[in-house]
Length: 232
Image (tube, rainbow, N blue to C red):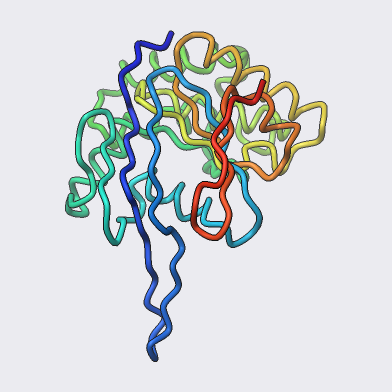
């Protein structure tokens, strides 16, 4: 599962926000770490610790002010907006707390959306989307719209969508935040199976029980990583 090669390599990354009137906020203060292919990592920390900023940088949604970030061998620190958008589409899958599904669109079409943006034809798009929905246990829900699905099923659709481009890394931001405890366990079991199959997963969570499902936990405080250890 883990071939030892770094899919994420962050070196002395800093992020400073200029709020004007000489007010600057240092959200990240020299963060360095590497994540190998096939790892399952949780990022934890109190509000204001920098974990959301770190997730935005890892997700190529924001650029570091300084330092370097290599994603699957590519230095993305200095890429332009179009290049960042392209690498997000090819290399990253996103799972959010709020699911972010199109309300009037079937599960099949929701999952196929990244393939549409990647220029994949309709027939191939539908076949790949259906395969991913079967992978997450929703092969009998292809034509259901989000309001016809439970919260857990909606999150499974979101996970299928995140996986449809076969990304190098799956990024999950509070993936169980809107789910009850039983459904949260089901989603965490799914993540465990995906990781067992070789998926690299990075998950931001405030929940210690959720974090323990990962194999490694990075703890942040005041823009720095203060602990990096195996979860079990």
